[in-house]
Image (cartoon, rainbow, N blue to C red; front, side, top):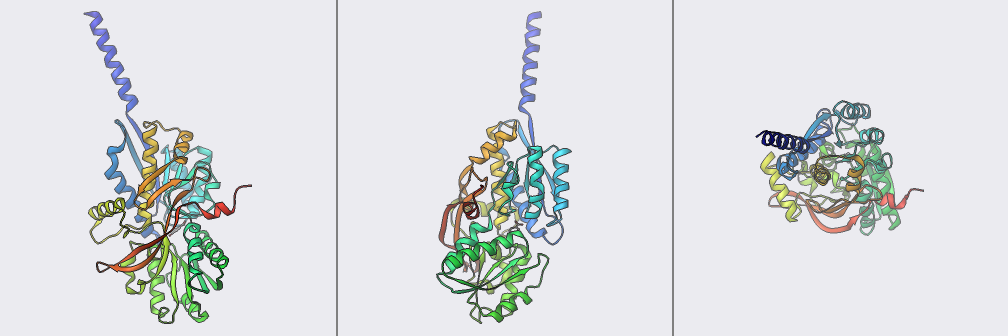
Length: 396
Ligand code: PHB
């Protein structure tokens, strides 16, 4: 009898211990933009994370849960982002950081992730050199070199004289440099270039300068959101299309969530990008349907939604592989070897050498599909393309 009781107690104790061991909560710090002029972009990240978390809780091992901790960086604000990351690491003790629309913010956070050994997955911030700041940084979004460089090469086959108009911060400078290199190498000439302050809402003065210079084509990069629509409106209002000046750029300028607001001026605009809501891959169709079901039939997910979705998919993979017991170095190993053949954007993987995304880049044209403006993919310009900048600038 006595023996029975003690073995029962022992069994109960064992069950309690293993139960405790199995109950793991993984905290994920998510920094995005909920206020200020960049909140439209921040909302895209938020929607992507929340949709993923809602639909995929069942993909975690038994007893493992995630606890997302959301924070508002208020826009491109390096100091605010750094403070939030510090708080998430030191006080909240998050085991992952993700989110971050803006490159200056991600660049300010990156050194902290190296010190604290907290893996940081960029769901958007695209600044080309951020991965070199911290070995705990990886990116599932894109670099501007991935889209603008092949676009420059393609454009030089159609046009000889281009004018570049980019947002005046590092991703804009990188887009300008990448397009210029691709375009010039293939025989094109840059006849002028303008840099627009990040806070600008009126693009007319810049587009007027372009009109006066009479190029054949404008290459543009803006940080998506409302600025994409404002620049398209300036293109329309100044009748640049009628003046024979074609509008091309990275996919940010015709971002899917804003496209219906841009009007018919967007028809015929050509871009290069890794994601289009109109793509007919089955993984994308399921993704767009889930998005519409959650947020409304009229809304389309933009590329930032996919960035957030894929970031969380990669984090879930790392959590699953470790059964919820997160070791930062093991996590980075898993991330470096990460592959997903079935992202809504097509196949993706992380380049283990650079921790940057490899993905397809598609040439697209804005057309009407079923009465709606759509970024129709015409051609794949690069398959599982690495970041070209890192190929040209190998570490010494
Ligand atoms: C960035 O800050 O890295 C960024 C923001 C918006 C974009 C692209 C890049 O559309």
